[in-house]
Every structure is written in structure tokens, then in C-alpha cells.
Image 1: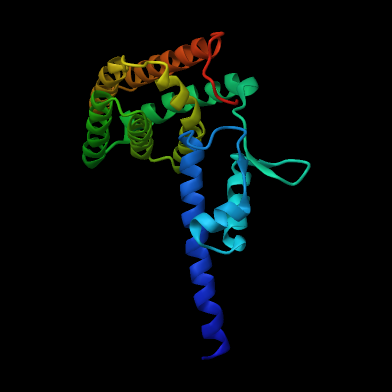
Image 2: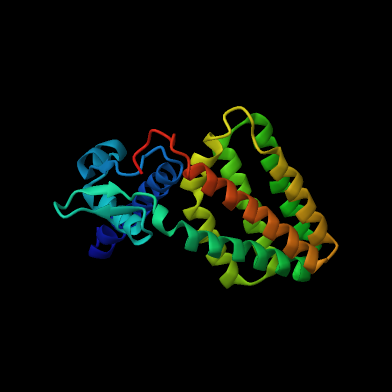
Length: 234
């Protein structure tokens, strides 16, 4: 075996291993399966994934760059707490992206875009009907990301996807507050937004997306102002 052969195979395995660890831990953090403040143990992760600690560390570096984990002064690693102090600035950016991407979709969408958007809308409606919180969050993000794609501004799409991802932990807490009453209203509002996009009614798309986003924001802020919040380290 040549030296080049001996090097290339481990690099491929390492690269795929990093992605596996990164993808799974990221989903577990965003879906609150790994609670804010919980410790991350490299040794345990290496045993869990049956990998060396090198790809584990590389995956953790990626997660740290996204603000999902942080290293403490004693060099231990933990899941980052939710930044409630900066919720208002986060929500300002989120509402703006809801509006901008929906307006652009009304201007620039193609027929095939509407088919994709409607597909995610139906998936979201099914998730609400099934009372599947994680599916609701995922399909809602996919729905709005598809609208952003239809607007054909990759910078807005990238930023909006990041905001939707960062909001997953907040939405996980928010949807849990519904208990047995899930937000059918959001399904209806999604349908109205689709109709405005299809009609290329830019002002209606703006108005509906703004109201939709602001309703979610107001309800989330109301939830977190309650004194009987969830029994979870934040």
C-alpha cells in the first residue's frame, strides 16, 4: 500500500464521522433532548459513537462555532443556555426575515416553488393533527425555508435558515405549553400566505407574514413571562 493510500482512507472516515456526530448532537441540542446546561463528555461520546476522540472534538468545535455548546473555565463542555436576555433582538431579525422572504416569494416564485411549499404545508398540517411537536417544528421550518428559496435571494435564505434553526429550542418549549391544544390557527395562516404568494400580492404577503410572525413572538414572550415555567435548566 502506498503512503497516499494509507492517508486517504482515514481522512474519508474521519470526515464522515465528524458529520455523523455533528448532525446527531445538533439535532439533540435543538430538540432539547440534550437540555441547556447539560455536560458533554468526550469519552462517553467516543464510546457511544465507537470513534476516536478526534472526530468527536471536531464535531464539538463546529457546534461551538454555532453557539450551541461552550467550554467552561475548567475546560469541561456544556450545552449552551438559551439566551433569553437577547430574545427581543432575535425576534426582530426573525420577523423581518419572515416579511422579506415572503414578499420576495410573491414577486419571484415559479410554479414548481408553489408545489414544494404546498407539500411542506401539508406535512405541517399532518404534524399538527398528529400532535407531533418535533415534526411540527421541522416542517414549519421547511415550509418557511421553501418560501425563502422561492424569493431567490440566497443571502436572505441563509440568514433565515439560521434563525429558524436557532429558534428550534424556543419553539420546543413553546409547543409544549399547548399540551393538548395545538395551533391549528397556524395551519390556516400558512394557507393564507400561500394564496397571497400565488396571487403575487406582495402587500398581502407582507401583511400576513408579519402578523403570523408577530403572533408567534407575542405568544412565546407571554409564555416566558409566566412564573410557572418549565422544569428545565435554562
